[in-house]
Amino acid sequence: MIINVDVKSLEWCTYLFLSQDPVGIEEWNAVLTDPTKHDIHTSNQIAFDLPSRLIAKIFLFRWIYRGPAHAYAYDPDFNCISKNVKFWQDVIDKYNQKYYNIYQKHLEYINTVNHTGHLVSPFGRVHEYEMRKQQGVWSYSESDITNHINQGLGADLLAIIRVIAHQRVNVLKKKTNLVCDFISTVHDSIVLDTPKENLNIVASLFEQLFRDIPSYVERFFGVSWNIPMRCEILYGPNMADLQEYK
Image (tube, rainbow, N blue to C red):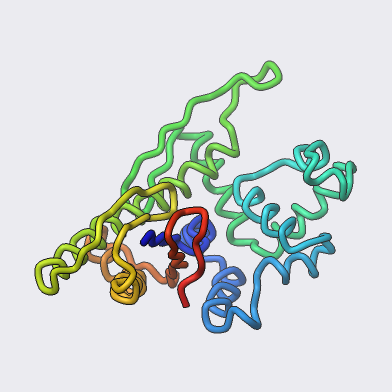
């Protein structure tokens, strides 16, 4: 049986940590407490008068990487809503106001790179940036600046999760003769193969691991991690026929 473990909203969690945005953190904690009553993307859809939850979700994840207004106006997925650049800039401005700490963190990162050419993540990873010639002017890409620091932090978290998961599975193999193999990992997911009767054991292992993430971040990097991390677990006979584990 295939088990697919996805980190829930990894890139949003890492930006909440980097920015310590109070509105975003409050929303995220509410979602984890009762996802049936709280949904960030539905809330934004209503607040910013967007046509669907999916559009609000896609917009949020483009916004955290400084997607410009004209990109939405010329994107077929968005210009069916409006081809007006001012319309999309207004939506961007509303997101900037709501998640003000993230917006300010963007400006801080851009200013730092413009002066030094690099950023250092909370875990110590150094991100070097190169200028590009855009419309005849050499400059740093704001999208790259705001993206690399966040994607890098997420990759470091996944590295921790993979190593600890592998260690815990090996311990269970020795104690209980558990049969479970790691198949692959892509971005924010880990794929395993195990007999169906081991589903609950493997799922419980990962659920506990995600609750333990703050202690491992503190142990390995001396950083206090205050954003709850959760996983979504899917299982099935193959990747095309997965269902959610509850």
